[in-house]
Image 1 (cartoon, rainbow, N blue to C red):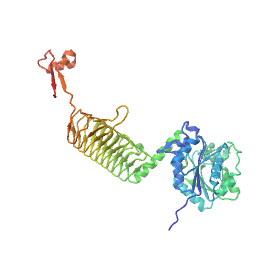
Image 2: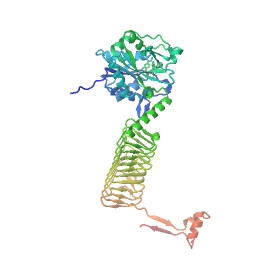
Image 3: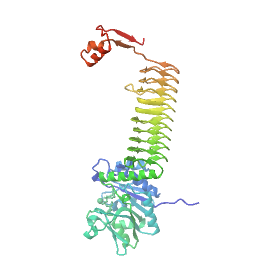
Image 4: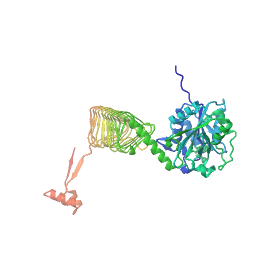
Length: 492
Ligand code: UD1
Ligand code: MG
């Protein structure tokens, strides 16, 4: 039996920073791209390398962040950073917490909560290189055109990494270096522990720099090396909302591309937004201008779009969803929805069913082959199979205080503008006439009519609206435009 591959001893995710440039009441790392918070992306990448322990360091908006993290990853260890600032102090706090039960040995990885495109694959590569080369520290770096603000990678004449210099502490010559520290590292636990004990706050920012560990590790005789990535997006952090949008667009570009490679047709990648949590089958077709969010899944041969937003919607095989706004709905195999349709939570449309133009639905189960083709509202209802709901039908489900259910059977045909005043039940095979207001249960096979007699008052328009165009046309149409209005009633 092949033993299960175990990952590093621990991953420490740094997330204590304030993120002031976001100018937001929401903590920076809780801002979302691809339908997931930045820290959510960071936690997934960290988990994907299968660490024995995962710690996250918090401070700014501590309770909000801790609550969010515990929900996403209940076994993550939440560590509080004290008043001493700096990435070194943050890691020291995490290491102390992780060491509490038993001193860590082996590889400790450090990542950031605000670097959302970092992949598990690149982290795994960092760990693999670190362990293969038996390094004391391995830092993930990138070469940037504009390295302003970043810590610069210092290398000796033979190219070996000798340390990191923070931008604010750097000389003019050092500022010309374009290889930057991503802030993501693999450390040997013992080296890290010992070096952090020696790191001071004597620098331009008065912080305990994690970057000082590299120089200290080298002085102690350890090997320090770098993994250089050509994919700068994977090490990019979001500090403000401009960067957040750029990272969001890049993440989406990657997600859309991955689905196309997996067999999904995307007519216009630029206007197709797919959350990281969405799943699509082969031969799904996505038409322009759509947003697929949350736990949305789309089955084989279904067509979604154009102009559609779906959140937590299940789209069945071969279904067609056009110009629709939906959430928490299930669309059956071969069913049709739209255009201009609003599916609200609890909508379940059966196989080959239809919810057509200008329909709103909520908490409604619609059986196989049943159709609600045009203009209406169906809420808190259950509709059987092969039922045809006429144009303009409405379930009057709300009496001003409580909601009530409408139950409509199979093989039912309802006339245009039927109103179901819930609670009410319509039996299998029943019919209703146009304009029926169904206040009483309709037995199976019955025709329900609620007739208000129509009354025509002849000559009313010429008499009451003399001189209008309507009156003129009416007079021309009635040869003998009698001056005495007569009434007729129909439908008695
Ligand atoms: C840090 C690195 C720099 C690197 C850059 C990459 C140090 C000293 N410098 O700089 O070499 O190029 O990241 O983006 O490490 N954090 C805490 N507690 C703190 C301070 C920061 O948890 O006390 C967290 C932040 O939430 C953030 C990360 O650490 O996720 C980096 O902090 P930040 O202040 O952005 O670091 P930089 O000064 O940009
Ligand atoms: Mg800083």
